[in-house]
Amino acid sequence: MKKLLAIALASVIIAVTLAGCNESADVSATTKATTESTTTTTTTTRTTEDINTTFKEADTVKVYPALNKDTNGSYPYQLSAYTTYYDSSNSTRTVNIKNAVKKLDNLKIPDGSTFSFNQTVGKRTVLAGYKEAKIVEGDEFVDGLGGGICQVSSTIFQAALRANLEITVRACHSLEISYVPLGADATVQWNSQDFQFKNNSGTDLRLSVSASDGTLTCYVYAADDIDTGNVKIKVSKDGKSYVLTRTVNGNVNYTTYSKYNKPKTSSTTKKAN
Image 1 (cartoon, one colour):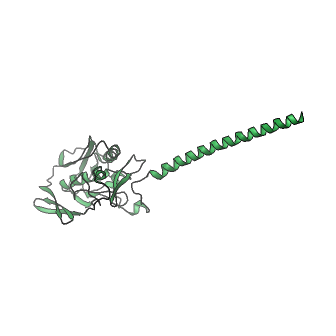
Image 2 (spheres, rainbow, N blue to C red; image 1 turned 90 degrees about the horizontal axis):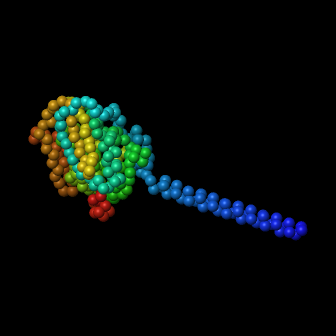
Image 3 (spheres, helix red, strand yellow; image 1 turned 135 degrees about the vertical axis):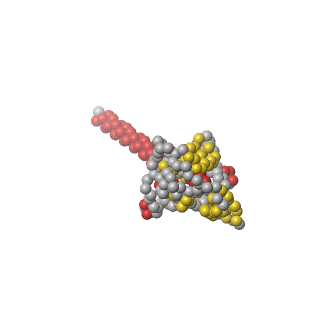
């Protein structure tokens, strides 16, 4: 009898031990899977378009008085318009363009005020709704948050030029782009490169910006009827440089220079931008 009880007790101990091992194995597998999933998410998703931010943002740019939207005011006089085109089937790039447009449409720029693209649109982050699409980084087109918004800044740049507004900050991309003529772009990068212009028109202005079905358009409207003059925009090539000049009533009042490198990536990737 004692022998039978000893055998039964041993069997119970073995069964409990095996059950404990199986439970531990399941927990370990779950923990491992969760860790791998979390690690993959946090290492592949950028939280901002600027992957090299190592300094305080407020120390790098001048903060201007905030510009507000005005949907009720009267701005009956069209000073200029400019349209570019994008591939609406590129869903992430389209989302980024439309996110920026929402911040810019109906924006009032009072007489004498400065428009800052970065300050108006804000930081391009996941929480702000931006997706990964092709951006220029060095000599390559790579995936980055906010890809496509440089087309918005470039479109506004061209509209501001034609409204004879004072361009104060503008830079070209490091690589060739295709949505505006070479030499006619205005790149932006949070915390390092802005696009800015001053409203020197003598009246309040309002931007009308829209993006739909692959068409991106910026209009500049004025509260008062002003004479912008006979504005002509010309881009010419001088050696390796592209020279953009704005002539008003026969006199050049703005000139900017652009140089581009050739991308390391294929032409197919380039055209996607």
